[in-house]
Length: 112
Length: 114
Image (cartoon, rainbow over all chains, first blue to last red; front, side, top):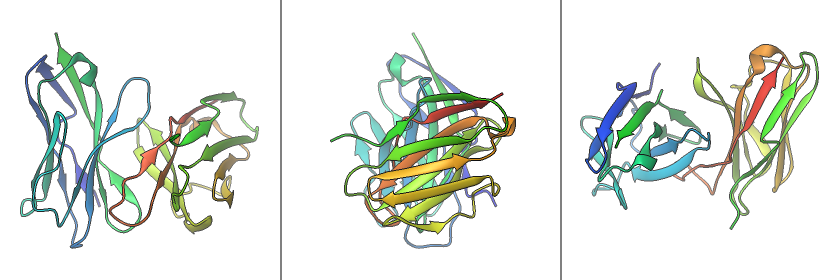
């Protein structure tokens, strides 16, 4: 069963604007972790941000923030002040237990 | 500190040949994971180790695939014999510990089997 859903195969955003990448998840566990990774065209997987299921505040890392709505089982990534270098694939992932499940990804393109 | 190191970065081989991919996890990390990424199937977990011991290899596609971790700083993923459908990017990742710990990925090995 699909556990991580990213409904936006592709997104466009104008440089310097904010963009939200959607992610919903499915779990019956109480303890889990939510992650976002960036994969630029060079191929590496870069960890961006983490949210624990018990964290009451939304995680933030520089221009990245995670809009965590536990009741709705959503963990959207917000990128503020988009830069051309933000163009990449973005993967949402959930870790319950040891292994991690990834969504299909969203390709973000930042327009100059 | 160095991140996860993988070698080679690119591998091109012919069908039927043996392929060995290598990984050095981040020092002190107790968990090591091997993933495969393809356009069709996305990122798939193949196998993971805890303290050098294979814990779950249910994602390994066939007996042609095998993985070892002889010590805390080295792991291999071997495909023998390789087939064209094994062409993919193979990632190694490591994490410090348990369920909510971040997995840090290596740069990946792009494997092409002709």
